[in-house]
Image (tube, rainbow, N blue to C red; front, side, top):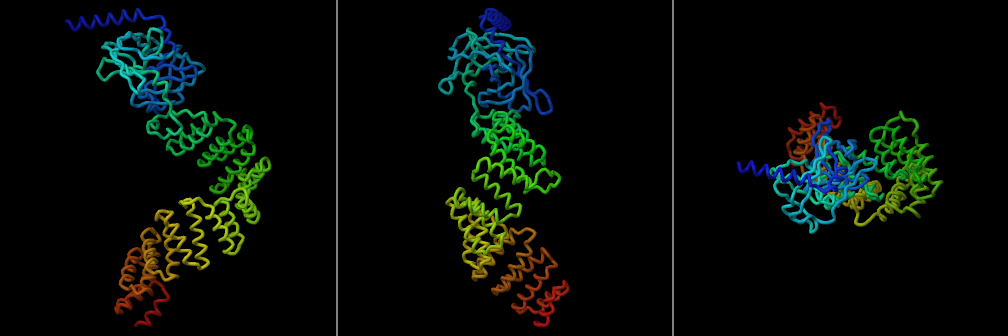
Length: 556
C-alpha cells in the first residue's frame, strides 16, 4: 500500500512539475523531431527522437538508431518528413551522433553553455505520433568526462521516455540527449555540448564504426581531403556508398575535373561507355580548367581502348583520344599533357614520334623512371640495338627513388632480361637477384627458370638446381616442364639417383612425358641398370620420341 501511495505521489509531483514548466521549454518542441530508421527491405528497425542543432539541418540523435540503417528519415514539428543524408560524427561509447538532415531550414535549438548542477530541475521534451510531451526531472548527479562534459544521472521517475529526446533547462536551452538506463526506470543524458563536437575526419571513412550504415560521412570542405576520401571509399566493398561519395564530390566541387574523370573511370569498370562519355562531356562544359578536362577525356578513352576488347562503342578511337590530348596540350603546354600524347602515339604504333616525345620529356621536364622506360619500349619496337635500349633502362633505374621498392621491380626485370639476351649472365643474375628481393621471394616460376639458365651458363649449378626446384614447386600446370628440366640438369652434373627420382615425379604428373622417360633411361644407364633403362627407352619409343631408337641401339 505504501509503495502504491509513493508511486502516486511521485506521479503527481511530476505532473505538477510539468504543468509548472517555464514557457521557454515549450518552444524547444519545435526543434525536436521523430526519427525513423529502416533496413534494406524497408522494415522499421528504430524509432527515436533527436534535436536540430543548427538551421542548416545539423542534428543530434542516438547512434544505435542509425548505425545499421539503410535509410533514415525525420519528421519535424510541422509533420513534414525529410531524409538524413550524412553522418557528421559519432560516439559508440556514449551512443550519440551528429547527422545532417536534407531540408530547407530547421528550427535550431539553443544549447546550454554550462553543465546543469546536481539538484537542478530539467524538463524532458519528447515527440511521438505528432504529439509533444514534457516531463520534469531532477539531476541526481553530473559526472564529468573528458574534463569538461557532463554525463547526467536523474532521480527515479516512473515515466518511460523516448530514446534521443532532450533535457532542457528553465531557459529553454538543451542540456543533454536522453539515454534510458539499464536500471529500468532511471534515465541518463549525455551532454549536448559533447555531441556538438563530434566530427569524423576524411580518414575515418574506413573506420569500422561507420561501415555498417548505408549513410555516408560528409565530405570535407578542403578539396584535396575530399578527393582523398573518395579514393579511400573506392577501397570499400560497398559499391553504392562509393558511387554516392563520387556524386557528393561532384556536387560539392562541380567545376573540378577530377570528380567527373573518376566517375567516368568507375563506369568503365561496368562497361558503361556512354555514361563515361557523358561524364566527360559534362566536364568539358562546366570545368574551369579546360585543358585538364580534355587531357582527362583522352585518358578515359585511352584506358577503355587499352583494357577493353569491346568494339561496339565506335565513338571512342585512338584518333579521338589523340585529338583530345593534343587539344589539352595546345591550351596549356604542360609536360603531363605531352606525356599523354606520347603514350597514345605509342599505342597507335607511331613509335618514332612517341620516342622523340618521351626522350624530350626525359631530358627536361619529366626525367622519371616511367618516361625513360617508355622510351626504351619505343626503341625496342623500332629494332634498336640492345645496348641502346639498355642505356635507357639504366637511366630508368638511375632516377628511381632509393632504396628501390617493388614499384621499380619491373624495370629491374627488364634489364635482367636484356643482360641475358646480351649474354652478360653475371649481370643478369645480379638483376634477377635484386628482382627476387624486391618481390619478397614471390617472383613467378618463369623468373626462376630464366635465372637458372644464366646460372648454368656461368656454371653455378647448385643455384640453378635450387631455382629449377623452386620453379617446379610454384609452377602449377607447368610443373612437369620444370621437373623435366631439373632431371636433365641433375643428369648433366652426375646426380643420377636424383635424376631418376625427379623423372618419376614428373611421370606421376604427366605419364606420357617422353622427355622424362629418356632422361630417366640415361640416368639408369649411368647407374648400371641397363634393363630398366631399356624399358624407359622402349616406352619413349612407343610415345613417338625419335631419340629413343638411337639410345636403344647405343646401350643395348
